[in-house]
Image (tube, rainbow, N blue to C red):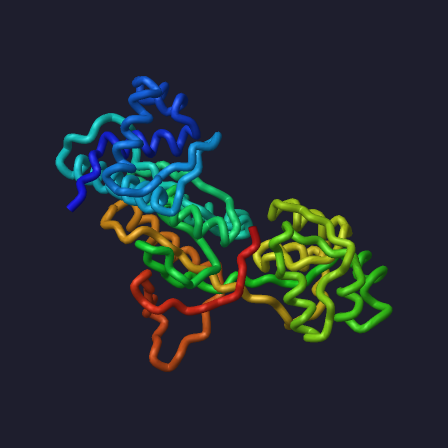
Amino acid sequence: MIELPSDHMRTLLAVVAEGTFDAAAAVLHVTPSAVSQRVKALEQRTGRVLLMRTKPVRLTESGQVVVRYARQLAALEREAQLELGIADAAGPARLPMAVNADSLATWFLTALTRVPQDVPVCFELYREDETHTAALLREGQVMAAVTSSAEPVAGCVVRPLGLARYLPVASPRFAEQHLTAAPLERALSEAPVIVFDRRDELQDRFVRSLSPSAPGAGRTRHYVPTSEGFCDGVVAGLGWGLVPEMQAVPLLRSGALVELAPGRRLDVPLYWQHWKLDVPALAAVTDVIAATAAEFLHAREQTPEQTSEQTPERTSEQVPEQTSDRARG
């Protein structure tokens, strides 16, 4: 069995974190030559190229495997030190997590405030879309993520959270000006629309749910890549859009927004993916995330074999459920 020296793996983590060999050397208080030698030694032991020597450096697929292993090993090492009472004074455990923008703007921070205070943990959040979320898990940059993908990343467990509900809305004035002279599916295809970014397909999917032959959302597209800014843009009358139900309901009640198709909505399934590690801090956060999501998100329809108490998990070794849904941001 090939052994990977812990000091070499810490050096690799430093290079990845800092982006260059010189910067890693400064953090580690060694020479750049020593950093280079350690990385080369790891590559010789594994028989794989781990880093692309660009600026900043980029991990190869083999490098992602080693980095993920190194970070998991570091997390387990710290937990063992805490249990033995020999941990240094470095502070709480660092827990990097990836989350989509709409979850971050609606319910996710509430969940973090509910993590028991006796769990010493420092949250480091990455706001990324679903595709990059999976990449962050594969690379080992994050230990857990909210994602719309049911397919487990290697070495991870997937837990269903619930359905994030989106409502098609617009300001009353915008609706009167742009959405009353034609059938709704046609009007939505022609009216200005707000989208989060170029990966945001929610508005197109909603229009096609009204009419499969519809071309999608309007050709005039305003890109607003923050959840709060997106909602503000719809309220201001910049365009129509799909707004998370938790943001939309108070604005509907106040009259700042109107529903474009009452009774119709778009539901996106969300999942919690996390490393398969016995780390108390990660376990505590996972329990809180699941409980808070059950409170704020809509429950998925269950089969007769399932009960409300069951929360099935899926690992990377099991056959994944396929889904084409994407969470915004």
